[in-house]
Amino acid sequence: MKSHPVLRDGHQVKLLQGGAEFFPELIRAIDAARSHIQLETYIFNFFGDGAQVASALERAGSRGLRVWVVVDGVGTPKLSEDWRIRFDRAGVEWRVYSPLGTLGLLIPNRWRRLHRKLCVIDGQLAFCGGINILDDLHDPQHGALPYPRLDFAVCATGALVQEVQEASTQLWWRMQAVRHVQQQNFPEAFSSFRAAGLHFSWLHDANLLDANGWIARAGLLLRDNVLHRGQIEKAYLKAIGMARYEIVIANAYFLPGRKLRQALVHAAKRGVRVRLLLQGRYEYFMQYHAARPVYRQMLEAGVQIYEYHQSFLHAKVAVIDAQHERPWATVGSSNLDPLSLLLAREANVVVADGHFAKVLHEALTRAIASGSDQIMPETLLKRAPFQRAMDWVAFGLMRLAIWLTGNRY
Image 1 (cartoon, helix red, strand yellow):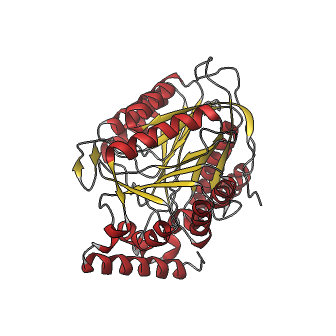
Image 2: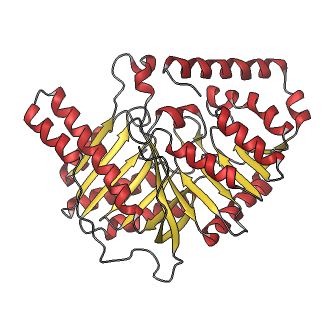
Image 3: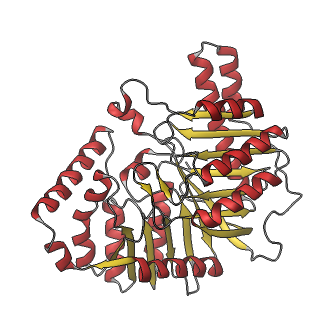
């Protein structure tokens, strides 16, 4: 079982903040593609920038490229009839991971979602991060947003591209196999299972990033329910344990388990400056309220907590010792909560590079300074009794949900 990622030299990794940077880069890469495109996302929303990405995929399919798109059955339950027709005409293949069915999320096994956001172009360029195919100024539940979400992604060349394509290809063929089994087409199901274990040839004859960009050491982190059950959490624990100067974590849904809480507390007590940038706007009952009961332990240890209020915080990133000799950073889809760390398919990129770490550190520092409020111990005491009761109700329900899945956290 692979517990830690292999970090290799020779990568070019570019940080992309928000849809304003991510979507133009993604669309440019799709339009430049010559062979194949594989995209995975939790939400694919066909409004604004999302429609622009869909149109780029349609153009790629019409050029004869192989285009595979996988979305999650909760985040994107169905494709509109208009886009289904357009994708079918263009040859874009669309699959829904784990459709909910009649009983929906009442079945705990269906809490295992596809939450990673990956795209690989021609085996040369990979995208990984927390950004859904969703316009930054639009929210399906809340409507128009005055400010864009705070979120990040990376695009990268180098050895980790092969890992991204391998992960995406294996998932595709496993889904194909399940589909054939449901149709009782067992010869095709057997072929798909075999294909899920195959390695494909990769293209390396072009560099789609700036040729003058810096060369970084990087690797891919995965979380699934087979070979990579604890890889992301273990990587966080190792990096936090090795921190000597500063830890900055931005996380949308923050409910770390005992080991992660202890690691952050121990880091703060040994003199490391620990800053957490967390969700400050109400989005979902469970995620919003369940995080508050862990604040007290963090604050008592000297951890600084900031809640982001300018817009929705959707980032899942961290940077450690950015200004020092052993920088570490990660950008991806995994929250530090039980849904991500115990149940969902997730993907993060780890970068051990001073320049990249400083760029991410500067972005998080700006967000802390301009869009957040610091949470002090007295702030918790001033919360209304009803709000504190809701915090503990949500925390208890989350613990119950973990127990129902058979996990310990």
